[in-house]
Image 1 (spheres, rainbow over the protein chains, first blue to last red):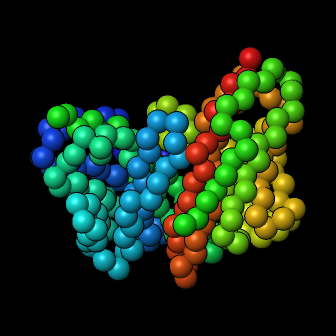
Image 2: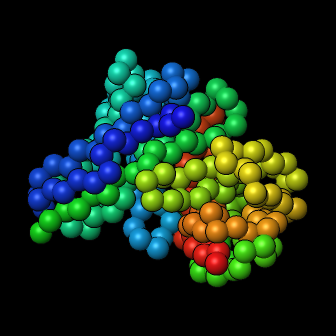
Length: 114
Length: 114
């Protein structure tokens, strides 16, 4: 039972354009969401997070949008750069559970074309 | 910055061997995690620990055990390795911020079981 889903395994975008990566979740108890970026042969690195009390969080070129009613979040990268080519994972947790258990999606491979 | 070190980047073991994967973090974090990453399946939680000698099963604990004798060290043990445990193993520690936090990952240990 996949509680966090990333339905697009891959995405190609031209350099300078917007990249939009999507993530859906099924557990209504999830209230904290994170995005991680992973290069081959390296561990994932934290990008940006959002709490369910917000619907948008921005950090430089990265913006995460949260639609609680649709149980959907998206990561926007503007403008996209070749160095952004990586696998992106979304993760979700329930802050009230006290376990700090993070559930990850299956990932989306982003390729930014020069 | 937080450093999570996994002792072995690449291992090749034979079916039935006992395998130890070691992970050390340098930030005095209480919570530590072991995930495995497989193509198309994303990151799946094997075990986590919220204190010394404390452990909790994640979503796929079968065939694995863990040890947390010291706060900085969290070990994953495969008692009798099998070919379906060939995978990338990722250790993480959590920098808590209230009821949420940010996971910091090691570089991963790629295990091949022949």
